[in-house]
Amino acid sequence: MDIWHATYPLPINVQGAKKITTVHDLIPLRLPYATLDSKKVFYNKIKDALKDSAVTITVSENSKQDLLTYYDVDPDKIVVTYQPIALKSLNATDDEVSFLLRRYGLELQNYILFVGAIEPKKNVGRLLDAYAAMDIDMPLVIVGKKGWLWEDELGKTAFMFDGKDTKKKVKLLEYVSVDSLRYLYRGAYCLVFPSLYEGFGLPPLEAMNFGCPVITSNVSCLPEICGNAALYVDPYDVRDIKEKLETLLGDPQLREQLVQAGQINAQAFSMENYTKRLYQAYSKALGS
Image (cartoon, rainbow, N blue to C red; front, top):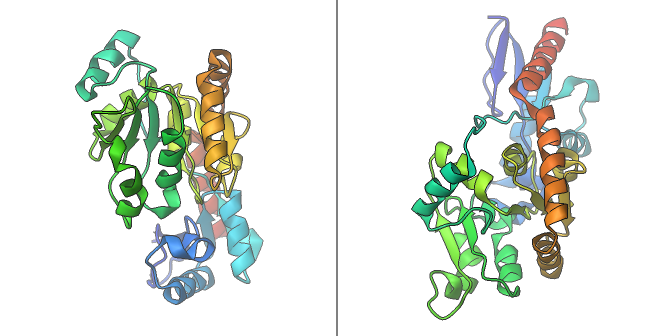
């Protein structure tokens, strides 16, 4: 064996092999209240991985800068590969998309979508607050499993869940197949992803790939990943989230511009480009 690639920091070495470790993010250090990890254990685990690895792979320039901020490490030993979009493309007509959406009681381009685990860093609570303040009858669809502290994120706006006395509806879809997720992206009016911090942030790119415009946060790696193909919000500002949603809902031309820009942006994160970057990381490790 020439290379031992640990896709998560592990205190394991293979005799005679150059070690590569992937570090996705430093969220336990950057956003300590949002994770359950022991921060000291996490810090030392990353420190040991950086010391033992010929090359460390990470998934954005933002995550690379985090590593350089928290650790004394040679920047030349950190390679950014980004992540690829793994969901297969969808060759379906609007009628076919509408047919699948009926399974969830949804209509084409008549719902707002969020995709991600329901936990503090994903910021679903503020998204719900922004949605509650809007005068619309378009449903908000949350696709994601309940994570740590999910009750705090969802509980305060429970009145909107299947509410009989309000025109607003929040649909929580905890378990969606990979195939159905492609249709949900394709059928949404937009994706709103107001995360507080990401190492990479795959849902916005997936949405772009399926022609779904994106509203996302102006923090961490998200502007780096989404470029000029998204509307940006301050994720801590409920009013900003609400206003950007209202702007996009009221401007079909802006929506179409974001659809086109998003599809171009997503092409940079193809599996082919990822493979090339991974090859470069492996070559660097062997060369060292």
